[in-house]
Image 1 (cartoon, rainbow, N blue to C red):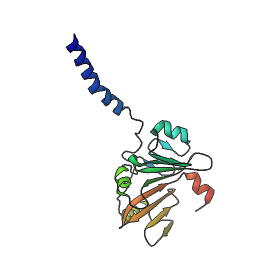
Image 2 (image 1 turned 60 degrees about the vertical axis):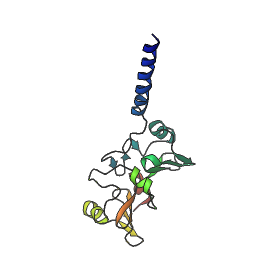
Image 3 (image 1 turned 30 degrees about the vertical axis):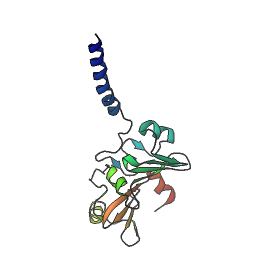
Image 4 (image 1 turned 180 degrees about the vertical axis):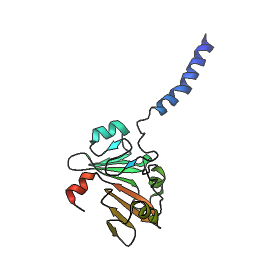
Length: 168
């Protein structure tokens, strides 16, 4: 009887962690899930902080209106209304952890690491460039691309309403 109980506990001890891991709240960034101006995976721009945390769990770092999900490779900035104002995917300074952790891509296959010429080939000429050729803004996408060594290191996503309110 004692052996049977030990075997049962051993099996439960092996299966329970697998069940917990498979029920993680963090299924946001995957393949081809950037919808410019609309959403990133399950995150939509009309979501509030509690809704974001219900979906993703506690951020790795948070302060005021900033929710940093390092393990997924992005940071969420809330606007004055308390909804998502922008999502910064990857890293503005090329932090390799953030770059490798972000797994999202547009339906066209654009993601962190894409070449600047691929961005222009897919989306046309940018609305604005800055700092030489290290920053492209696409008002039509409500997105910015930041480059280092000619490769995308950061994609900034904004809601379509941002462009409508602020103009090109």
